[in-house]
Length: 427
Ligand SMILES: [Zn+2]
Image 1 (tube, rainbow, N blue to C red):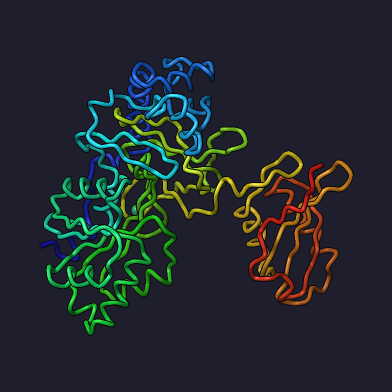
Image 2: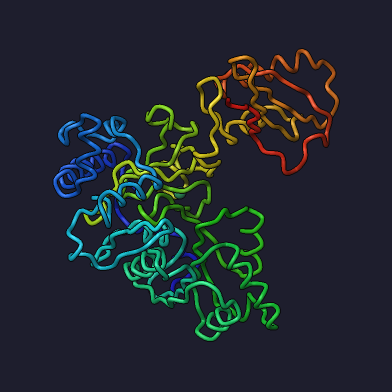
């Protein structure tokens, strides 16, 4: 059985420590290959390129992806209606599939017969899962692919699995204890429920359970919840990020300072306004391109907004990291032709220590949009005029829209106030 030291060291794949130039070369080669393949086999990909007036040979590097539009999850419903059942996105004939998954919509997703994708496996390894672990998967195996993806990924690591699925907390805790489960996979909130249930059942979670590591996803993990779980269960908790369609797009390493991009796909942060790739620190939509021949998704939007960091990580992995998810693309609001979203409003507020709450209100005056930044201050402002000017400057820089400033005393904004309140009436 792996020791704690084993769990903290090593890499799943050699790719993870290659230089950025070496990684880019491999990605460019794989991109050319999947584009050529998908253009020939998946009619929806052919159409996507043809519409953008791009030939497969034009896409030689990751940067060239900027020429293609983003396909959103919502687009799949329309594509599948026109061309059932997979909307022409399947890269093999339906009789060559292993499974068919169903997401809400319903959206039908082709699943491969032989699972070779090692991206979740990379994440699991980085989170301390090792050969010999007995792993309880509490994600769904019903209709959706995630449970199966993880089950197959754990096999790549030589782990054993218990396909427990969701719910039945008491039974799940019993299984954990009786079988001496070492690895947990599930949502952070379910792990917390299991911890509470274990205590209710009279167990000492640290002593009576053998858990060593937990892989959590599908929900936001707060640092305070992580601390509670790690200290009360005596394990480490690492999170991953991805979607059911495209698979893993990021995973935490031991340093827990953002989520590394897995190697077997291309992750871009894209400005949804222009399709341009964003640099480090710039907020945009997380967009993935995978090399899966069964279901080749090219520039597939997650709908989530985030930003990346390319600062070196102490773990030795060289990929950039996805930092926190700051919101959803559909929370964006267009003001004077520019998209703003709650994450950007918070970025403005974070520049001023004295702002304890804020809200942007968008109204219409004549035929013009008007934006007011309402800032609630923790203390009174000695020179409101000067302070407002400083705030206006930051608003212009970050939101790229000119705005008015309204200073409010502490406690004025209700807790449930929307970050962006759109009061415009359209006749
Ligand atoms: Zn790292």
